[in-house]
Every structure is written in structure tokens, then in C-alpha cells.
Amino acid sequence: MTKMLMLVYNDLNRDARVQRSYKSLCEKYDITVVSVGNQETELYSKNNIVIMNAGKTSISNYLSYVKAVIRISKSEQFDLVYGHDFYSALPMFMMKLKRKTFKLIYDAHELYFPNSQEFFSMRDYFFYFFEKKIIKKSDLVICAQEKRSEIMKKHYELKEYPLVVENISILSDRESDKTRQILSDNKYFFSTEATCIVYAGVVTKSRRIDKLIDAVNELGESYKLLIVGEGDYYGALLEKIEKLNNKNIIAVGSMAYNELGALLKKGDVGYLYYPNEGLNNKYCAPNKIYEYVSVGLPIICNENITLKNIVEDKQIGVSSDDIKKAIKLVVQNHEIFKKNTIEFNNSIVKSSDEKNVISYINEVLTR
Image (cartoon, rainbow, N blue to C red):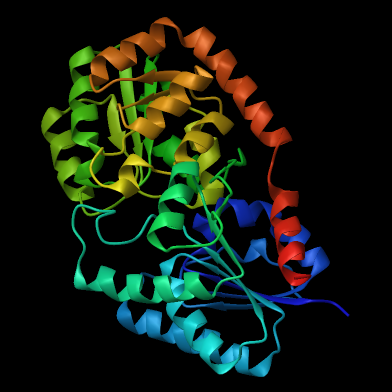
């Protein structure tokens, strides 16, 4: 008899490791997916149930998501529920109160408890309360980084270390209509012969993108900057770019995950910044490193302990709090870093944890 799994997400597009293993999971299990975020329907086979509450995660959206998870759990006898991120903790906790027979895997995307971040709000305490409850009830806890595993074991007083499954993210280089439109709308930028620095990700003040803009602007016409993404600091960045009136610096807004690779391949170097404040930042699990590497981009990053260790160990770029210095060093040694980047990416592809995700599920189901 085929085993039935429920996958509970905030937004499947943001979870690279299960995206990669999704087709294999579909072949082996009957799967129901419930998500509160936007999703690409092509990820799913027609035989699976998909519930989408598209749009931003408002309170009403979240409550609809919780109700959907509970409603489906009443109609189907799942053998295992695999929850991702703290958004899934509340509905899974309520499911577990109603029925204790199913197995439970909890995948912690963040290091999320008081003192793990600089500021912990009432909202944070709400989700932390249920995440702590569900972690205690889980048959397997997964996290994305070795140091996080050590910290979580101690904080939650777990018998075993959480299993480490890295946030490896491999971008497709398929060109979409949106990619072609961006290239068409910015012909001058993409035709200009200059070293192209790329930032792709959330646009917040903490990522120091404003400092990156200043550095590229000061380096002159031999450099250009492409910013992909949006966030609460996006408007301020647009104003800054407009005031500089530098045609070698552009921001193109956000793009879907499956459209990102073809645009990033137009770059030469990827930029990454995580603050050193708070455990969640210090011991980050940066899928963005793997995304840059997957399209052949050497990396510049700040001296965050985790980023620095990866970039310097694999020799795929430069870690420095001096952005201009980092850019110059990467450009001077670009050929070497590019070669190391390609080799690192090949090793990632060969050691993909797609099969491992399924083996973890099998192991939990047979306990």
C-alpha cells in the first residue's frame, strides 16, 4: 500500500532541497501539498492535491492556511507530515493533538528562539511557542547548518542532534518572457562592456546594498551593478540610484525562482551580505551561495563567520568588509575563482541530497 505524505509549507518556491526531490517523492508516495505562499504549478503532478492562498502572508491568509491543513488532515489518514518553517508549527501541533498516529518531520529553516536574533517581537514569541512544541513532538528534526544543529540540540534539550540538510539551491538557466523583457528594457546596461556585479535577494537595509551601490559607483565605468529583488528598502534604493544618475547601476525588481538563473548568468560576480549580529545571521544557511555558484559566479561577501568559511575554504571568492577591495581582488583573480566555482558546483550536483531526503523519510516511516 502506497504511503501518504503531507508536505506543509510557507512557500515551496523558497525551499530548494524539497523542490529538487519533489518529482522523486511524487513517484514514491501519494502527496498532499498545503502552502500559504505563491507557487509554480508546474512543480506538481496532476495527481496531487495543491491548495494555494496566493499573495503575501497576511493574518487572514495564514488562518486560511491553518484551516486548510487541519481540514485535509481530517479527510485523509496520513502516514507522515513533513512541515517546513515556523509557519507550519501551529497547524501541525493542532493536528498532533487530534491524532497521534502519524509520523512527523519538522524542517527548521531558521534558528528561531529568543537570543537567536537581536530583536524578538510578540509575533516571534507566538511562532516560537508552537515551533518549540512541535520540535519536541517530532520523529526527526532537520536544520540547514552544523552549528545550528549543535545550538538547537542544547536549546531544545533534544536527545539527538537535528539532521543537517544544507540549503543547496541550483538555478535553471531557462530564459523566460520576463527575462527577455528585462534584457530588452535595459539594452544599454547589458551591452556595456564592464564587470557586472550582481545582487539577488531580499532588499533590506541590513544587506548593505546601499554600500554596494556606492562602491560600484566609485569604481567607475569599468564596473556595473544589477540588483534583482524587492523588500522594504527597495524604494529607497531606487531613489539613490536615480540621484546618482549612473546608467551602469540598475534594479529590476523581483523575479520568480525558476526565472532567476538566466538573468544572473549575465553577471560576473555575485554579492552576499549577512550581518554578524544574532545567532541566526552568524550561523546563516545561505542558499544564495549555491545559486550564484550554480550559474558560475564567483562571490564577494562580508566577513560573516559562515560566509567567510565557505568562500575561503572553497576558494570561490573574497570575504571582506571593504566592498571595493573585495571587488578588485575578485576581478584580479577572476579566472582562478571562476574555475573553482565550476568545480565546486560540479561537486554539489554529484552529491545532491535528493536521494537522502527520501531515505530520511523512509527511515522515519519504518520506525
